[in-house]
Image 1 (tube, rainbow over the protein chains, first blue to last red):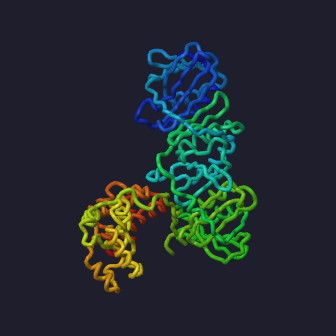
Image 2 (spheres, rainbow over the protein chains, first blue to last red; image 1 turned 45 degrees about the horizontal axis):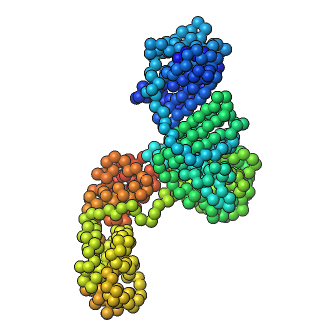
Image 3 (cartoon, rainbow over the protein chains, first blue to last red; image 1 turned 90 degrees about the horizontal axis):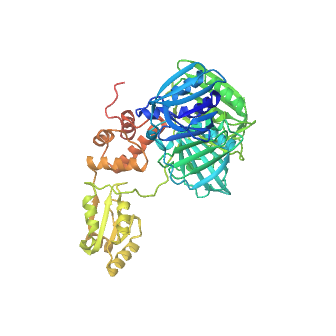
Length: 375
Length: 207
């Protein structure tokens, strides 16, 4: 293989795929990217961790000799990063090495043969639909913070996607760590009917979100089966992310979304967020507990810590039900309030031990459920 | 200082069939299951099944009915005795085996005719589970909850748990809840705290 490519193009492409590659690998080839130059003048770059793979095409300045090879993803990325701006990078393979040349720099990198590079077998992906990249990005932003990181509950380690027939057909995304739950709803896109329920793993979500950032004005093509999902993004050359799905069953989360909470608190999410943040300065690292006292049109936040003293703050709010006290993890409350733009947030409460529903209003696509702390 | 506030977990549950995938067979129910397989041998083709709460009486009853071995009357002790007597008579006329499940033990029957008929029936009782069966039950309950119990859980828990069906179910539910509340895998500290929550501390604490 011999090809020449602009440094900026190479760097952008490697920055997309290299984060898929784990820093430590027991299988050496998983540290590598596959570079495949075709006679038509384009280069395909692919990275994988066996569960997730990203493929991107980039235009080469020239392809002198088609061929494919694999080299260390992080080495090549670091080299491309440090090469002078505007330089042309030549990649050439010979004798199990790949020579990287740009300006007066010369590198010779060890390689592994392309035939050893593992590729995820996608199989048949019978469900296909399109979503605007912006919508998909919002779906991820509104839910990913609630994804669990506790690995024995592997079925919570991702975003659950499913279709449902409510008043009208919808596509729903949900994530929970057992303490809070986030749900995002959108009208079911054409082609998503009959879609199997799937759980997209956390790492795939993070990589996808990063890739979306660069093609927010385009559409994303989504193809999936019960075991694999593929996202095809536009942009230059196109980026394809294929991921295995989590092989597990997501809990029946709709049962924990309260429907009969009769105490309604309306409050400005921004000033509420800031007040929670201020009083939580006192909270211990371990519990992050903040107590909320509700009275008519008033909320009093308080924190007390054996080591750090106490803090309290009063906030004006719209509240007309019986007064009571409830405790929340300040970070969880902030995570959710940070998601709500606009002047009001609705908190639907029942009692100090019951799930609380938080949303912007009854028309919002995003809905959050937060479990309190024992006061 | 008051005790620390602690996080409550969302009551997440998997959508699942009412019945488990399999029936755990062990010392407590083996003889019962053998008897249920051969209703032809029951005196007057009638049997009465008793056992403690959550011991699987209804589950065995549904299995018996599903196998087409005969008819089942669950919670028979709560039915009107005259109706039950008619039910017994009808089964005798049809020549159908009849399994009566009683939640009460002993089952006090006031109607003399019914008392004498049922006195002659085969009495089956689900006993207390031994350690092996306790371990089997824990495994099956954890599986139903998609709960990973952790290595060595059964060898630690089975000998320490009270050998009661209802308590074992509560114990596994508590382990599941604590692990979710603490966002931590179910390991020794959680098993220990769950045992303490369900059946009290093993030894009184010094302080």
